[in-house]
Image (cartoon, rainbow, N blue to C red):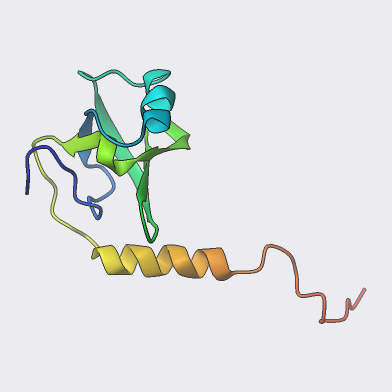
Length: 107
């Protein structure tokens, strides 16, 4: 693994540090909350077709672009492949957000 990169399937609990990376917009948003020397902990990962978003234990409701982070020791072993994470997220996005309107309400 390149020391200046992060695996997109880095597991929950992996420690990461912020690095310079991503689009200027990502940098500006991250600057509001994150410091370069601080260590953060991955809470969850969402893999999309063109980017990967990670959520940190320290900021559980805010997604950050994975290119702005590198893993720090100890590097934890993978628990899922990138494909498994991607497929799980894809399936979650396909689920309806409201009950099926074609099913009659029995109340």
